Length: 123
Figure 1 (cartoon, helix red, strand yellow):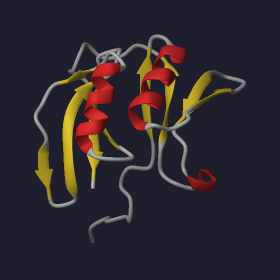
Figure 2 (cartoon, helix red, strand yellow):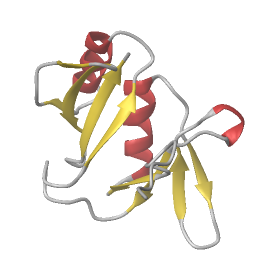
Figure 3 (cartoon, one colour):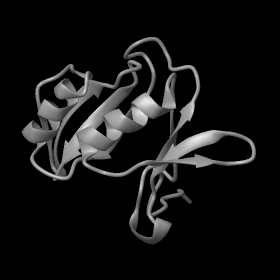
């Protein structure tokens, strides 16, 4: 028997060196509103989903891998891929690949302000 859940990924955590700066970057690129939460154990910022029921993740103060060497988290952009890639550059990140077409849509590899690898995805 093989385990095949509806969603294999259930959460992502992206380490950042400056939480406020990272929130501003992700808010600009994805035209969203990550908000800082203060939990008893640590501070973090959640990626929003409707009614907080979707599969998402958060940013947290931590030590990122060396630039571009960690895992890649793919995140959905709200509009055309090219518009989101322009915002990556405007916000100080780097676009490191041309768009890649896959059956589900298109994405490009990028680096956030801490060098975390992110895939900016559009259906």
